[in-house]
Amino acid sequence: MTNNIYFFLSIYIILKLFQICLNLEEKEWSLPRNLRRINVIYTSSFKVSSDQAIITYNYAYFISDGKPKGFNYKKLGIFWTANVFELYGSSYIKPLLYTSTPLDFYTIFFVKDNYIYLYRDNGINTCNNHIKKLKFENMGRSYDSLRVYYDTNTKDVVVYNYKESPNVEVFNLYDLYRGNFNVFLNVNSKYDVIQSLIYSYEDNKSKLIIIDRQGIRLYNLRVSYFKNGKLIKEYDFCCNGMADFIGDGNKLLYIYNKNLVVFELNKFNIIYRKDSFIIGETAKCLLRIKDGNALVGTSSGNIYLIGFINEEIKILDKRKICDNTVYSLSYNNNCVEGKRECYTFLANCGYLLIFEIGAGESYSKSNILNIRTIFYFFILYLLF
Image 1: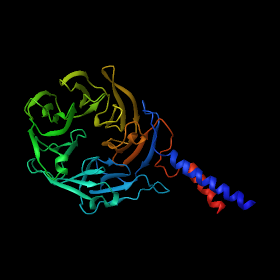
Image 2 (image 1 turned 180 degrees about the horizontal axis):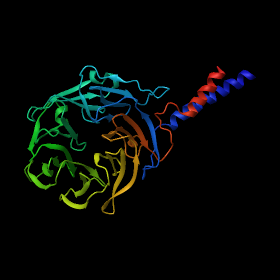
Image 3 (image 1 turned 90 degrees about the vertical axis):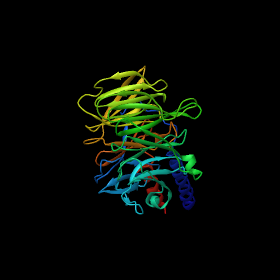
Image 4 (image 1 turned 45 degrees about the vertical axis):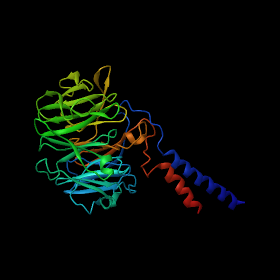
């Protein structure tokens, strides 16, 4: 009789463990309107360079001690240590972007010299899963200063040499998938390029946005009746700036110094501007998130959650996350809007910080130290 009780109790506990695993799967996620609940998943004990660090479904990639490295943040050890590996095979490449492409759903972009590398994201074996290696010769000297922007609608990729060249080149990943690598547009801005984006709209129509050392400029990219590459409109501002989309997708937020400007992209008109929108600190990085809001990381270690509401930029909340500067912010570009993974972020603070902005459970599904799981495993251990 006692053995039967133990047997059924064991079955019950096993079923509960499965239930826990199911409950930890992604569910609809209430969109966070503030930063009150931030769950820190991981803080590294090691230093990293100020270069862009990126996060994928399972891995974080970064530069430390001059080398490209990574680890599976969903398999953290019992003492919260990370099993860090070096990306052998193509040493000293720098991670740029993770996204879904026609070449592979798990495409990760790297840069080295005048080459853009495309690999399949596969952790320690990432650099053994080579997809493409593309050379860009008309952008001046580059060791690791090439950058990319990928538009998921048109499948176009913009390549530019960060602060080193006024040249921008555009190619299409569908063409590359079919075996034809062709730079179909080459644009020279007035000054060295800092950033470039693509604004796509309607049926395969798009415009090219270039931010250079002195301002922001809009060019035809894919249009029906006008010459591609033609300059449409430009605005000069002082100093280096950064930009990303905000709101419903046809607005562009441009930040320079401590000031910001919002453009309506159909006519590229300024519809809102504000000087000194943050006091006593400088914006260092900008990241649009899936719900249309954006995060701004600053020189003081703060992040600001901002939104375009009632035709103006509003600061929804502020939270200090880093000891010093927030050098970069990243999230999984492949996530589905409204899911929890869209609110898991990697911040480069000179060290790595992985956190989620939450409106649900306070424990992440990546947290293997889930108390309930340990409790049930402990009981199971006692029974057997």
